[in-house]
Image 1 (tube, helix red, strand yellow):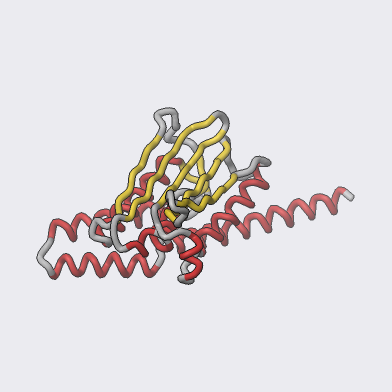
Image 2 (image 1 turned 60 degrees about the vertical axis):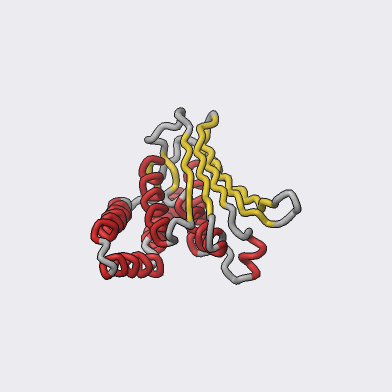
Length: 229
């Protein structure tokens, strides 16, 4: 019986390690999406041809920092909230340049939030990416993404709100959700099992005064003390 239990524990540990390695690989692929990379390089090339050396250099440096952050966290499923914010900020700045300032964002962080708080990797980036791809990019102008991070008792509340076309219209256009969202659900399942506490996600469809779609809001609650056993 003891041997069977030991073999079962070894097998489970091995399967968990395999899952972690697969998620690490998928997270790198999602962060360095080829389509996004090509768009950034094309934008840098266009600025160079337009004789805008300062703008092209700044964009190249932001993209370089994004790559460095990705490589530095390539073996992680967990990062600090400070690291996640740094990555997302660079990503949004690059997207603002791409969309010629038709995309704007706000980032509000509660003073009580500890920068060293551990969160799942891509916990903000994934939803911001979805907001751009499947929401505000379809507006063509005046796109807005609002990120709010607050500390609430035993957990961290992360809220991402956009004024995009909404999930129903995105589904009609065939652009709803994405691979990143699926990866996050796998992250959550793995971390929930390892920690015995749940990371929760709530997605709300926003409407205006006339009941028309007015964007999407995502609320993620991340419990404190996350780790991988």
